[in-house]
Structures are given as structure tokens and as C-alpha cells.
Length: 84
Image (cartoon, rainbow, N blue to C red; front, side):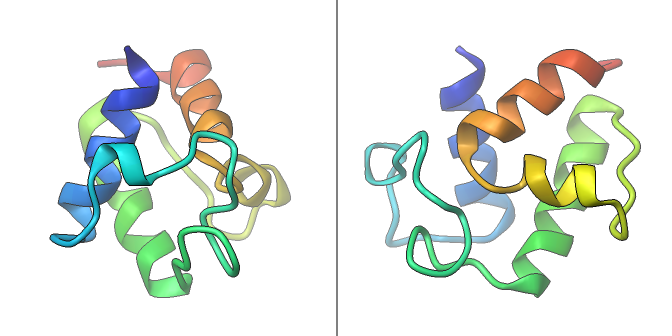
């Protein structure tokens, strides 16, 4: 399932050794009060998504920022745009 795959990608690409897939809530915010990611994490995750799924992302795009709000929105972005 893509949701689980995205959670695993977050853990692996950001080296969150103390976080499990079960710890990441699908609809919780990835930044701030949710998972607590920061802008550097967003860049690293964006690169990992581009490499794994062949998606081109624009860091300055409001649309991209919205898609990075939760695991579910990231999975929706990947599902619609993946080339791999």
C-alpha cells in the first residue's frame, strides 16, 4: 500500500531510527506539531520522492507545499504523478 511505502520512505530518507511506520499518523501534519519535520527534512524527503517515483517537484510551489502537509497528501501526489 502506498501510504505504508511513503511512511517507510520518510523513515529511511530522514534516518528516523527511533520512529516506526506505526508511529506516523496518516493524516497528522508532517511539520510542526505533527511529526516535527523542518525545512531541511522537506528538501531531503523531496529528493527521495523524486528519485524513487520520478516526480518533478518545485520547492517554491504552493501546490507542492500543500502536498507535503501529511502522509496522505504525499501519497496522493505520488499516485497522480509517478513515472516509476
